[in-house]
Image 1 (tube, rainbow, N blue to C red):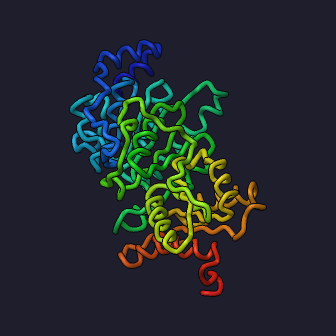
Image 2: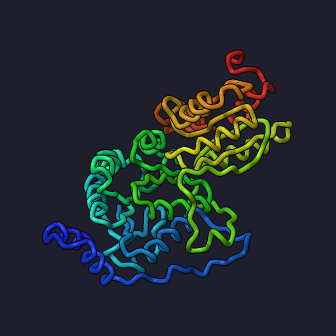
Image 3: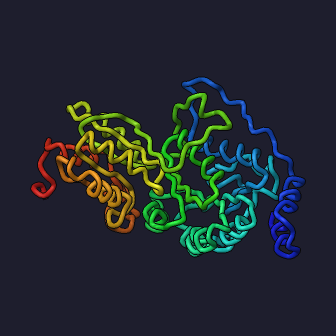
Length: 376
């Protein structure tokens, strides 16, 4: 793969010639897998991501993977399992521990029409490569007046895991969502992971794909439609996971599961919560959020990241700007503590939103408990 790029740079060959060389390296394999079509079939998030990568690589010879341990080790979290054996080292590239270096190579390859999928072992390490992500990838289409597309995906685990300390626990959703030119996706379920990753790889613009390490082994029911190789979810569209009429709860990634569990608890106390899985952080589905708030008249946002300048803050601002007259209670954010992530397990739990935090916030919004200020 890198040899092809060097030939392109050195000889000035055409994109068609380059694609021909790539196709001769390894013909596309069948995109179909022997998945069951049962509507109740279970699939882990790990398998959803792996199958999406496999099928997109099979369907498009321009797609290739690169990152630390994605090949011989089959991925730090086994997301790329089996892909080196199937597609070879030309399309599954193990890199040195140098995020700035291999991210720059990936962006350069995207400039020349290839479709790199760059894996960060954790998005905390993307800070080593943020210049390439923001200045090289995100801005090129605008600065070239639309002449340069950068079809690249940056993917890997994001946010808190368990006992990995402050340097490996940060949520970067708000960081990257603040940048024009980037699309930022955060899947929750297996359906999300499979459909959104396919959409990201097919998109002509750079996409930041924020996974969650603790969700990789989680299984979710999926329909026969999800198993189809043509399955794809739209970027910029949220999903209403649970309909309700009393309060709107927005969440993304792992926090969607917490919000759904909180909604079940609230239902036992007569509060019918609507839970929105954002899926896409940028672009943000403001229409779905505001439509829900105009029905429920209350809003809580949930995220693992820091509260200041967070995703929840943007959602609250959107609702205040567009639906203020419909609100019957103050909007409220449930977010991570405004401190670096503690290492001690008991403090770590206090630094990340819990189900009971969402329940308490919902009760406050519905005037079913003591207000936050009064209880301080």
